[in-house]
Image 1 (tube, one colour):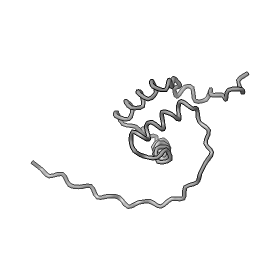
Image 2 (cartoon, rainbow, N blue to C red):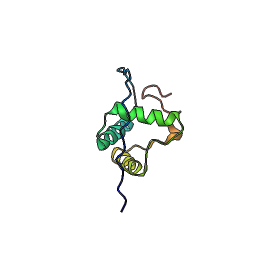
Image 3 (cartoon, rainbow, N blue to C red):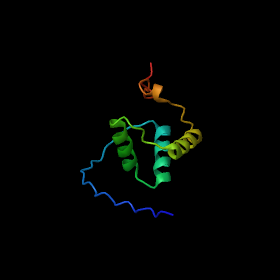
Length: 95
């Protein structure tokens, strides 16, 4: 049996982070928080990973994460889809 080689860790990248006042749909936030907790990472790390993948046209989630997301969406009643993204309005702004 062939021995697996240990992957060498890539060097860390030093970045400047800023605090932001991001507004987001509350059920979507609950799903993101649940996913971050599942992966034991911060919300910031999760969002950065999603954005970096999206910027390259890549899917940020594998099969396991998509299953967790589907479960969390059911738990929190998140029925929005990608088609919903340009139609979201704040409560009180709807006419």
